[in-house]
Length: 128
Image (cartoon, rainbow, N blue to C red; front, top):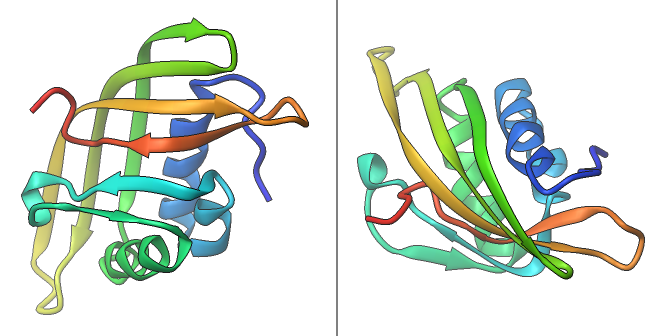
C-alpha cells in the first residue's frame, strides 16, 4: 500500500491509486473516520468512514478516471497539516461520454504514529 512520507504526498498518491483503479490503495490513505466532500461536479454532501468512502470511491473508479493532483502549498502545525492545490479528472460515464472535472482542493492530513500521513478531511471543493 502507498505511504505518504510528507503531507502533500497524500494527494499525489490518491491520484495514482484512483488512476490505477485500486480502491484499497486509495482507502489506505484515509484515517478510519476520515471525511470526503463530494466534488461539486458529481453531487453534494460528504461521506465519513471507510465503508462510505469505499462506496463513493468505487463510483468514481467506474468512470476509469485519470486523476491528477498537484499540491501548491502546505501548512504544518505539529502532526496536522493543511494541503491546498488543484486537481483534474477525466473519465467516461456509463454511455462512454467523456467527463472532465477539476478545481482547487483544501485537505487536512495528520501524521500517524509510524510517521506517515493520512487524510482526515479530503475536500476537493477547496474553499467553496
